[in-house]
Length: 127
Image (tube, rainbow, N blue to C red):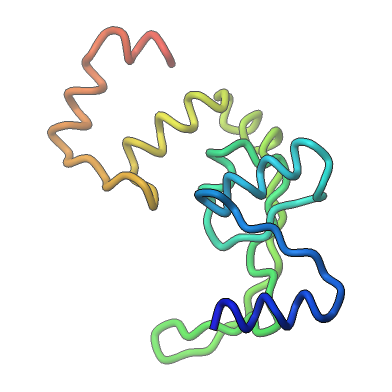
């Protein structure tokens, strides 16, 4: 199905870029170098890779079933620089938070491990 989708898109004259690893990392890089304006993803992981502009719920069908109710999701725009400014953190600290909270790449740490990280002096110096 993926190959057929690529052929269809190429037949419409739309270029395809195959990421060598994570699509979020590739799209963040493309925004950084000016090849794209924003990253379209459901994941906030794009922000961890440095994607300055993220569009969520960017799809033809933005309906989602939540507890036997269908809701329509609005397109969400996230600016990484504004996001970091509002939280008063830098990108490195955001990545550290992602590791602690959990992402697609890291499982969430158990509560006792989180406590150990918080009492570790070098970790506290970062915040």
